[in-house]
Image (cartoon, rainbow, N blue to C red; front, side):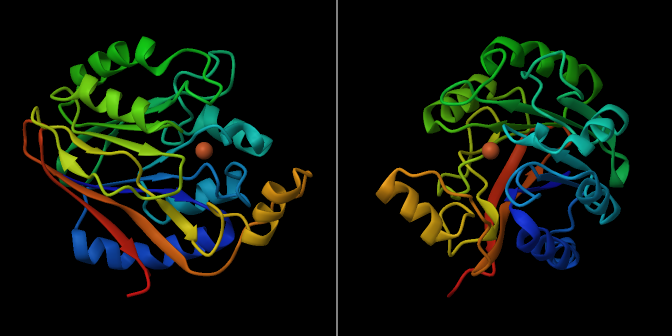
Length: 260
Ligand code: FE2
């Protein structure tokens, strides 16, 4: 089973780049399932209902979310009605949507996707460590292929979750920092791991925001309206390959459009 996991899509430039890159990614990597973190697709703040529909129509199997998912109110009915559009499971139970799904994908595989948010520097309703065992146990009753997106700020929280889940999930990937890390590896128990998938969006920026606006805010401390950048747009993520027992055999990061 081959899974393509794509890092945070930022703004219209990120959406456009991803939709353009998907056919080539499919040709090159032949994935059975495609998972995309889209929580910054709407100008950096959430995912609009239209964008969610566009991504699913383009063949993305599951969308994951994060701290900005609830910023676009028109996504709420989508979160309630479309099981393949997730928000972190450990946000409030009273908020719309859910954080796990099991999908039947190409090749006859069943794949579970679990979306969590970190509790270090982010507002989680419950620690991801408090809920993850139950979610993974339930997913493993359905399928050996379990992909977890932990949307988190702190490297330590993601690394710790990787070790905690090693041998029980096919992949634990981090999202949210928008900077792809160079630590993709298969842990000894067979879990593919990377601290951050990176960003599908404009890299001549400060994690997606126009760099002069972000720099000015750091220099002056004054509030400013963040606007998405537009240059050096890249598509970043990983390809994970797993055996029939759900254990990963490889993980490889990609950075499409990077200057050479
Ligand atoms: Fe985020």
